[in-house]
Length: 254
Image (cartoon, rainbow, N blue to C red; front, side, top):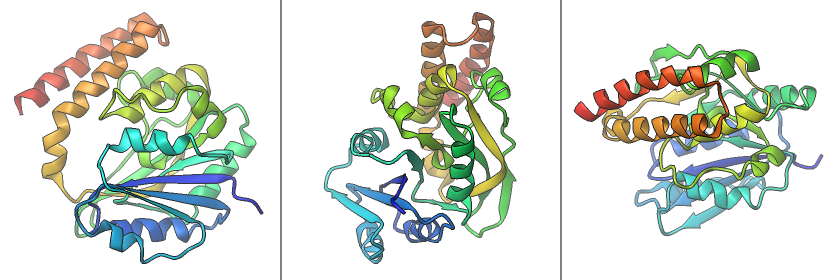
């Protein structure tokens, strides 16, 4: 059977985790995919970790310059010819039935633009920190998305035609590019989250997250403002911006 999913993973200095992340995709119960791995100018041993894998489904692209996640995803999106695009991060682990469950959902919900799922977050020792509890239905997601991003980027599974129709990711967004995309997508197409946790997020470097917290909050607020400015969501939901602005101020103080 011809591949009908393209899995996109951009790697930047993930030598500790990228091997396990790649394995989790190669061990999927749904085998009909192309796995595009972009080394985005890593300065550690990520490249040597990636080159250990010889699976014919892998397309490895080694870049010398770091351009960031948004640019790299858009570059490869232009080359995608499969029906679906699945995201994956180099520090996460997909459950073996992840692609199968998301593929089944999208083939039975032809009008849907994307499907995500819940996920688990673990620490460096593998101990569970928490599990997400995202809204599941398109109606509930649309009602809550302007308050907070109800998706995990690395578990998203898109219909390629719709993703390209939207123009892919907005390259003005260095952070929260997924939130901006999903605000645009959810305004025009049905979306969903599967209740199961189909991904494990490795929370290894809290200091790094702290460093970028203000930038993430800033770009998330910009995505919300843009969505309201476009008229994609009811004006009364602008009250959610007060929460975002408060979080932005708190992040700035930190």
